[in-house]
Amino acid sequence: MAEERFWTKSYDPGLTDIDPARWEKSYVDAVAPIFKKFPAKPALAFMGVEVTFAELDRYANRFAHMLLAQGLKKGDVVGINLPNIPEYVIAWLGILRAGCVVSGVSPLLSAEEMKYQLKDSNAVGLVTLDAIFAARLTKIVADLPELKVVATTSVGGFLPAIKRVLGRLLKKIPQGKVTPLPGRSVVNMIKVIKGEEFSAEPPAVTVTPDDIAYIQYTGGTTGSPKGAMLTHRNAVSDLLIVQIWLSWEEGKGLALSGFPFSHIAGLFFNANCIYLGWTQILIPNPRDTDHICKELAKYRPTALVNVPSLFQMLIANPRFKELDHSRLQACISAAAPFPEESQRELEKIVGRGKLLEVYGMTETSPLTTMNPDKRERKLGSIGLPLLNTDIRLVDPGTGRRVAVGEPGEICVKGPQVMAGYYNKPDETRQVFDADGYLHTGDVAVQDEEGYLRIVDRTKDMIIVGGFKVFSKKVEEVLVEHPAIDMIAIIGLPNPDRPGSEQVKAFVTLKPDFA
Image (cartoon, rainbow, N blue to C red; front, side, top):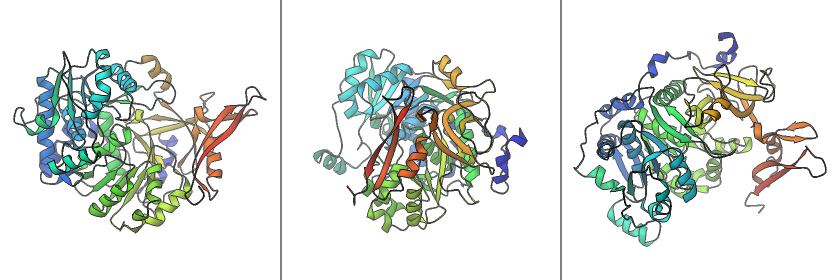
């Protein structure tokens, strides 16, 4: 295996695989010392309100005890259907401490999509907004017989009373009426965590590395979303690998991300901040770049973690260009390709060498490759396979390994790779090969130094006259046009040539050309 891992020659000096014994612990046990080291430090910053690590510790314990008092047991699934507000982090940590399983449920889902995910995961509990409770949950709850307890809150639940009143009057805070649900328990989350009914001490639940921490749903681009089962070992290994890769230190970071916590990237970001004892700035609405700029000016974070489209929105905001980015050490881009021209624009604003492209997926907890921290980063590359991570590129048609420089499907093996899809053994077997490698569906090329560059999804390759056309290659050429802001390429059946496709581009124009 060692000779196959030729990319290790490109690692930063001193980097080598980690002893797997270091992640033989649950996430709950891994972060326990952090709350003792940094009790007075803000863990969360939200709309002018800060929550310390000591407060987060107490709130999460009370929430965990509430779940146990409601009859939930180890292994039960609890969905969190919230935007990025303090209650999300509190519920997430409390669920894990109770030995239960977290399943992020996007607040953007329709009622039917919510119902699918809650039924598919056999969710016993749900944490949601009062507005979603009234508008969606009441319509589907009759079809969710396993759902026993619902905790509700408001977007403004942690805000001072005057801000809550103004927010509702100005209709900036959505609201809905919470009513009893026959046969279910409905609890007010703020009363649970700030009241005295439940103990603020850790619950007596033993959580192991093999226990499932998350059932995290895939995007469902090819069929219904599937729940990836991620163990505590998966979570801790990926966090430790990234910490060592980037030389991140406990207690010495302050980070902001627009990724929703219901997305695997947001989930990792949140878990990482708690794991390292960092303050995280919560962004409930990532489309509001003026608010993001205000928070950047106030807190001056050391790390920004966003999807490329949000970085592009920030680039287009004049306020972002005027900010002092001298304390910013890393802009981490994930979840989608980042046009190289936009990468250059971002680094002109924040400083050269600060952008770090990474690659991962829900099924890998999520990170598998990253550009080096100290060596020069390759623009447009997703970097090198991480520590303890093996990658193969194979021909999607034959399964044979491809030569260096040739496109092939990325296949991953490592401690961060999921246990499988929840209640979907057939789908699980389909994505793992005989050697235990997870087939990602992403096509990349790897150069002689080991750096990878995504060229397409296996299902996004367009066949034109028998030749494979990689949509990303077409996008990279067209985006060079000065009028084009963002672009997406698809293939459509060619009516004149059965079995062949036509290339179609969807573009958005830059403001000066619109």
